[in-house]
Structure formats: structure tokens, C-alpha cells
Length: 283
Image (cartoon, rainbow, N blue to C red; front, side, top):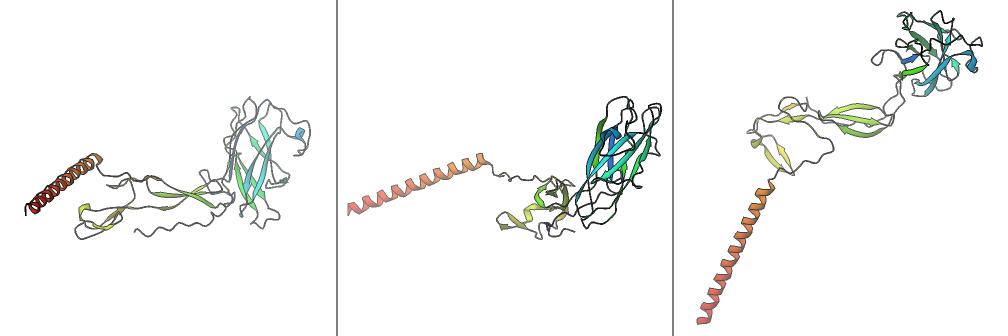
């Protein structure tokens, strides 16, 4: 049922980084290649402030329930010599340990082809935001299922997470199917409505209301309402001004004809006036 469309201009609520959202269902995804030629770090135990205690690191932003951003750092530490394929993964958020058991790493084991074992690719992350008033804990899983261990340099292939901060409505766009999308200041878009089109059995039966407005009548039949591009309904073009449906050539010909008629009528009146003036002078 078609109803009047109202655009909600309120802020987009924030989304915390959490499981159960997105294509994979995991809060964050990280795909990297860990160099199989790397040696066990010279310094033990692991200390994020000491670059000699880990092999590689990367970071991303995650968000709490209020949309506050937090920096998550992921550290990779070669656990055993090259003859073995185990790596320890340490997670810190805002500089604090965020593994499920603080200080205890998550171990990823690779097979002889450089692929992680299916049972060891989801890193549990647990962190309590401090001083933000957000819900705690911030808990999700970091998916490492596409991480590899090949004989090449450390490289990052994918880094993503599902959370985002709040956003204000910055603009609107309408696609050809009539879907109205809101563009927000957090660089996200949201479908907030859809324009419907109507078709009538007899368009000639519509009643003209002026200003390019028409009304249903008995002769037009009842409207058939649906989404653009479906059935006999057309498409929408956003930001476009409808072109005139007038045949300019035909209208120009009609203007010339009317001008000729006016000139002929004007000449007839002039001739009649001259005849009347001659009759007056004969008296």
C-alpha cells in the first residue's frame, strides 16, 4: 500500500564491532601473509613496546556501542622454528591486552601448504572500554581464515570490521528503481524509502488539474501502483529535468501559419478601412 513518504533526518545510530553482522558474521576480518622464512624473535616474552619481541604487526579501528573509535593492534610472533608452522597472535586495544585471557596469545597453526588449519583461525577478542560509558565488554572474533604462511614478505590483503560511528544525514540520492538512499557523514548509505509509480488503463481519461498535475477519474480507471522498472512501469532518473514532449518543428509550422493568418486578416481590415474612407469622401 502506497503511503506518503517521510524522510527520517535523524542521525544514523552507531554500530558496535560485534559478531553476527555482515557477510561472514564475524566482527573483524584480517587477511595477511606471514613470511615462512621468519625466525623466532630475539626477545622474549612478547612486549608490544619492543619491536624485537614480535615479527609483524598491523592495526585497525573498532567501535564500541556509542560509536567511539578504538585502535586495535594485532601482533604476530613466530612461536617455533621454521621447521614448525605455529604463530602466536596478540591483540591489544588502546594499548591494553584484548585476548580473551590477557597476556595469553592465540596460536594459529598452518599446514605444509601455508594454509591455516580450519580449527585455528578465529581469534577471540574481549575488551572493556574505559571512561566512555559504552556497553562492555567489546567482544567479537577476529577472522584469520584467509591468512597464509608463504615464503614471501609480510603483506596485508584485507582488513575490515563491521562497526561504525554515528552519522548525520548529508544528502539524498534516488536510483532508477526509486529507492531513496541517505548519505551520511560516516561515509555510509542507508535505504530510507522508495518512490512508487502508478499506471492507468486509460491515460487519456485522467482529469487535468493544471501545473502538470492529473487526477483519477472513472474513465481513466483505477491506478496500478508498483515499484519502478516492474511491469509496464518505467524507471526514474535522479537529478534530471524532464524534457519537453512538444514537437518543436510542428509548433514552429503552426506559429508561421498563425502569423500568416494574422497578416492576412490585418490586410483585410486595412482594405476595408480604405474602402470605407473612399465612400466617405464621395459624399
